[in-house]
Image 1 (cartoon, rainbow, N blue to C red):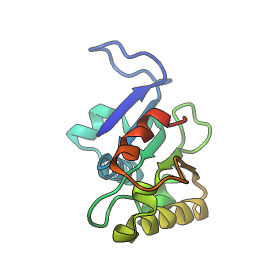
Image 2: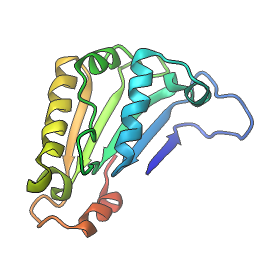
Image 3: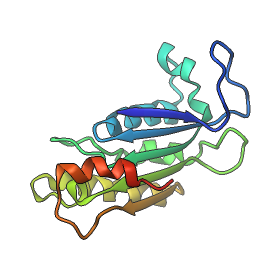
Amino acid sequence: MLLAFTVNAVVPHRPVNDAQQFILVGFSKGGVVLNQLLTEMAFQKHTAVTEGFALKKISHVHYVDVGLNNRGAYLTDPETLARLSTCRDPTGGRSLVIALHGTPRQWQDHRRRWVSDEKDRMVALGRKSGLEISEKWYMRDLSPSLAMHFRCLDQMEV
């Protein structure tokens, strides 16, 4: 699931104004969509889909308990993360802000160890590149469950 919010209200059928900012939230497998959008943003690819979405307007990205049954849940390409560090928010101020929110369901799953490895790699490479990346644990002391995966949405702090 991918959600997009705007900091300022959007009026349907009106162009995005210069001050408008988008906040993206990817939940579970929605992290793959965030990876693609951020890669497009980093390399400034303009396609019919991304052009209309105004990638330059993205100011914050939230990965919420993302994970897959194979690799690719998190963005781990060093060049992409380095390029993202040069992207500024729409007001020309700070760089893109990325927040990772997770539960033991994804970050401590011994059967899918690559999820936490990818998360750690994204954090390390992103910070090395100068990106502002934060990690927030939820229900850390509980046993992993599918229910906690969805409860993370209720408990998510922005």
